[in-house]
Structures are given as structure tokens and as C-alpha cells.
Length: 200
Image (cartoon, rainbow, N blue to C red):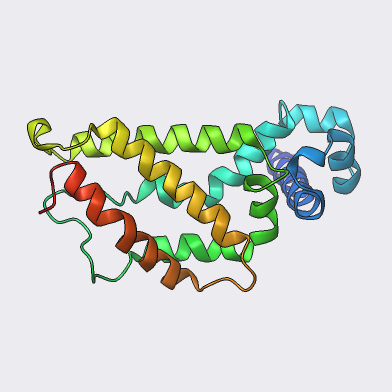
């Protein structure tokens, strides 16, 4: 077997496991999905599963990490000198990110909502709060001008973002991604900018 054949088999196996996880979570919720159910749905054995992933949560992080990549790469607070302001169009990446969540809503309801992973919710909130705090620091906002400590602003933004996403995904019908992006920014951005001393 050539190296290319081996790489293709690895990618195919991982794809089958990711697809199995997405289907089962949409059907049952994350906590109700077992390794046995995953391997049966993906048509692989447990040994194969553990050759690729340490745990069900490890597999979940790979799936979620791909979807949430834009949030890591395109920060909302990227430039304190020229930040998003009320009335501006939402960033294209944010609309595309929400559209991805909308498309996979049954899965993300299953991992973020009731019956989902409390560990994932906590890890995402903590991770993105840390990311936001770093970005506020890099934005060169004078610390003596901040009304609220950056770590507090970052945690509030992260918690509000995840809470808003979960609520939106549970709606039927859901408002369009572009509208949700605009509402979120109009609601949280002005207060966040004032809190870190970057707004009027």
C-alpha cells in the first residue's frame, strides 16, 4: 500500500467518524452518544477509533474546531483605532460562520444545548474569553481608560456570544444569519467598546 493510499484511508476513516458523530448527536444529543454507537454507525471497530482519537470529546473538538476556525482567525476587536461601529454591515466572515452553524443546527443544538456537552460549553467560553482578552491587549487601549477590566469584558462577550448562539439555534424558524449578526453586534459592541475605553 502506498503512502497516498494510507493517507486517503486515514482521511476517509476520520470523515466517517465525524459524520457518524454529527448524525448521532443530531438524533440523540451529545451525552447519549457512546463510542460503540459511533463505531457501529461509521462501520469501524473500536481499535480503529482509538487509533485516531483518544476519546469521544477529542473527536468532538475536531469537528467543532473546524466550524469555529473563523472566530479564531477574524477577531471582532481586531483594531481599536477602526472598530466595528453601529450601523456598519456585519463582517462577511461572521455571516458565513453563522450560516455554517445554521446549516448544521441539529448537531450544534445537540452539543451546545440541553443534552449537550457542559465541558464543551465551558471550554469554548474560557478559550474565547482568553482570546478576546489577548486581542484587547494587542489593540493598545490605554489601561487607565478602561471602565471595566479587559478580562471581565472578554468573559462577558464570550458568554453572551455562546448563549446567543445556543438560543438562536433552538428557534424554529430561525432569523437569517446576517440579521442575527447585526443584532448581536448592535447589542454588545457599543458597550464593549465603552467598557475598554475605546468608545465614546
